[in-house]
Image (cartoon, rainbow, N blue to C red; front, top):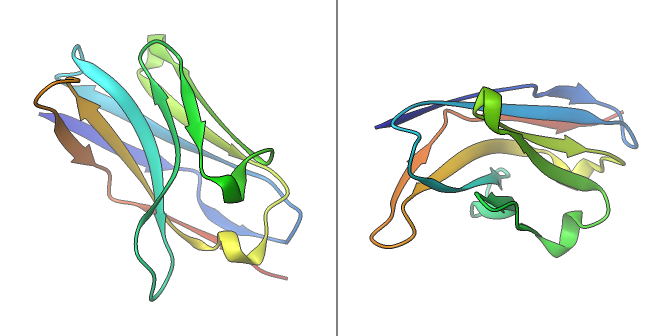
Length: 118
């Protein structure tokens, strides 16, 4: 079992920045990748960014150049730095972890609200 605790959401004006954090605990030794998803009202949950244990990253086209995913292995924490935020970035952001590359198991955090509004 892996437990994920997210933090860092809030209300920000368009053009502003936020940094989300996701701290993992429990059986973390076989974590293959950690990812951020988001879900806006009335929309499907979508992948925002991911980072594998070897440091490879990927991003949704809508956030490339604005968001950066990173991790601190010593703290078992992954971050999502969000810059130049837009109203369309408003959503609940969820941290997700994949344990094992083959026959994976996925765990989710509770979500943190990000609202971009003037």
